[in-house]
Image (cartoon, helix red, strand yellow):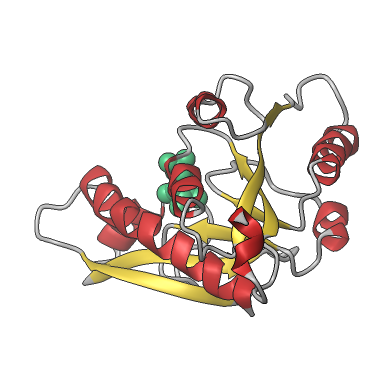
Length: 198
Ligand code: GRF
């Protein structure tokens, strides 16, 4: 019976993942989706950078991909193309994974409550960029990552889950980023699965 033998369990949610670069968080989500009890299937990986390493990684594994550069067109036109690709793939929820572009209020409104992001800080601390350098400069004892709902406010939506790591003597932004990233990969898949099961 194959997938039908899942019986009374709900059908898997169709997830779209937006990336801009190496896509290691996207890869962790794709790998987690292989588990029979994972509540989502990755329907599309889309990027604003056609050359993003993560796109090639996904395509090699048979995951549908889409690339659209925003260059030379108004933001609304670019976002309409991303939106159309997501809808054509039947996407029901979106995970941002190192997507380095701010989504417009319009786009967020169209997908209200159905977009999540992973941010490399213990929100509400250090919204925006350079989170690890800022945590070290502040003398914090720990850092981490947060998965949150995307709203119109940058890194401002409800936090769904967090992972914490110590900041060690001699840490640089890079060494701390590597320690946090290893936790991001576990945190994102688990938090996303719990959220989609709700
Ligand atoms: C991660 O640190 C994530 O928290 C942040 O951007 C980075 C993306 O890395 N939003 P990757 O592309 O998933 O490897």
